[in-house]
Length: 230
Image (cartoon, rainbow, N blue to C red):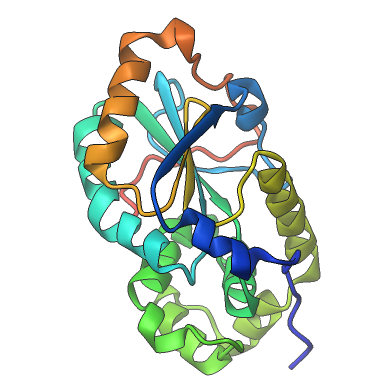
């Protein structure tokens, strides 16, 4: 099997501790955040929702898995399904296994993206390690019907790797240093943010949209997905 690409940009593992506790920081330009990366964004919700939540996640991150399992269902029920919020997922892989699975999730068919992300996050204990474990990762995603030879090709796709490096570098420019990191209409939150912690920030954005304008309309080339990721 070819050598696995690396998305490590240095010092992220040490910086992960910075995202272990929820914290609120400066507001980032919503227009800058709205610009998609070279692969387009993965979006849950209606494109014209007044509040945009951008999540930078790593598929090996326990806090990213916790948000997926505990906070996202509440967020969907209260806001996303009602057209008030859209969630934009962006990759910020930390470590070799996270890099490989980020590339894989983008290589698989678009229709399977959210199912694959949910599956990888919910089965971290079976495949997460310091080194990449292709057999265990394949067992987690083979429900998509992907054949092993195609899986191996996806896992080492250099063009997707290079695109995700740009996504991660841009995230760093927004002040992302660990996962998960969120931007609610530009307002930054980091760490194991609960629904109860995120809710008042969403409510404030809904009540005063002029103070925190939603992201600009996304270009047509960007991917809009409103299906349940579970």
